[in-house]
Image (cartoon, rainbow, N blue to C red; front, side, top):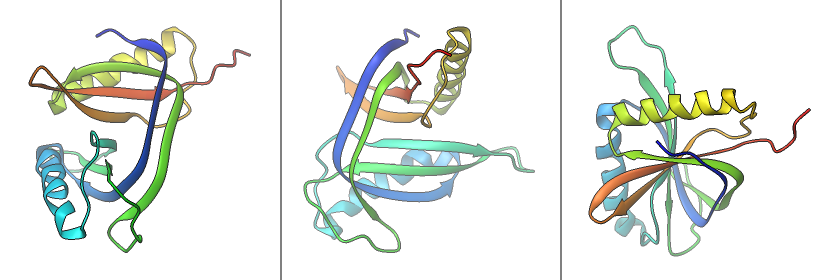
Amino acid sequence: MEILEKQYLSVESLLSFKTRTTYRKLYSLMAHLDDSLSMLGLKKTGSTIFTLTENQTVSNEPILDVEIMIPVNEQFKSNEYYVYKPKIRLTNALRGRCSYDYNDLNEARKEMQHYINRNSHIPLTPYFYKLTEDNGIDEVDIYVSVNENIV
């Protein structure tokens, strides 16, 4: 995987939804949120972005803390399920790309962590996963901002 430095990610007007799920159910959850936008009177205006944190469990499948953010066409009033975020912006970020498969997400994140360690970078943000579609192939761009200072 090629990792690019000094990348930038800025997205405005987002619907944010936080929950717990499994890797197996993650993609159907994102599809359900996309389908629910019309019931909220909103339209999707860009690629879905998500963060995830694995939690150790006693079962075979880890439970994920996940935040799914969908760019929408207008501001809305936050409620107990959905929160309006005016903007997210990552600067001086590393960016890698992998396929839209949870095994690849794990491997790509590990590769980026090794890259960060080898190059003495200090991560400032969690990993942000942005769904993308190039030539009909689903892929994910992974972003993490790093500290520019070297001490």
